[in-house]
Amino acid sequence: MALHPRRIRDELARLDPEHDNERMTHLLLEVRYGNSVFVAAAYTLAFLRQMSIPSIARTVHRGGTGDIMRATRQRNDDTLVFFGEIMRCDYTSGRGGAVIDRLNEIHSRYRISNDQNLYTLASLTLEGHRIAESVGTPVLSDRELDALYYFWRGVGRRMGITDVPGSSAEFMRWTRHYERQNAEYTAGGRAVADVMIADFAARFPLPLRRAARILLLTLCDDELLDVHRLSRPSRYQGAVAVLAMRGYLIGTRVLPDPSDRSWVELFGHTTAYPDFARIGQQRDRGAARVPHVGQGE
Image (cartoon, rainbow, N blue to C red; front, side, top):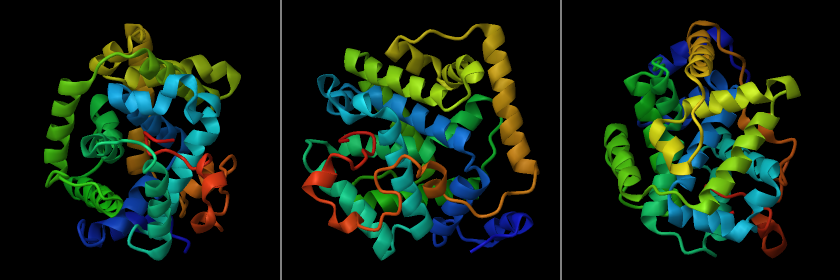
């Protein structure tokens, strides 16, 4: 259904964050803030956070044999398209449930603890807001943050993840505590971080790739840079990058919203499942091509 650009804000204001979390999440993450560069940046940063946890990094890197190391772009776009399918179809729908079941099927081959899954869910729930806060331009209202929390909590419960904190604020506190207790440098985590950063930069024209890398590193907090032993951009470079991100966020907040869009269309050109027509039929041969949710890819 096509959306009138000027009516999206009005609809968001009318919706209930808990009961209408699926609709609000689609409008926020796919329509309003669904710019492909911002989505890729938030996803990459979330992935870098996941790679700061040694147990998660081992599962993904797998001694350099993990799919993320061998086919980085396709693995990333596959994952983004899967998320897009859940957001545009709703996790409570049969279609959204089939996507989540397929993710659970591939993850069942790995030993992944509930806390690891919970931290992965936290990075998906909170990263966009963490970026906006880090540049001093928070753009989501409390109602909108609540909607995203209820959405990802619902996805997590559908996946069998338990002990999700009771609010977005509690989830953030849990996340920061988990990072303080568990984040640590590993060679595998750094190797995955390197290919992820390179893939983000490669989404830009060649003359802009160095600037794209600087932007991404600027958006990393000091703790994340230290864990992966990544170099900080210079003060001047960081200031320019922050201004660029602030400009994007402020512009997105005040300019008319775009028409309806989905991550499926934005990132589906390289995915192994361009139309998801046979998602419920993919088994052993397809398993190697099913994306990770930060871990068993």
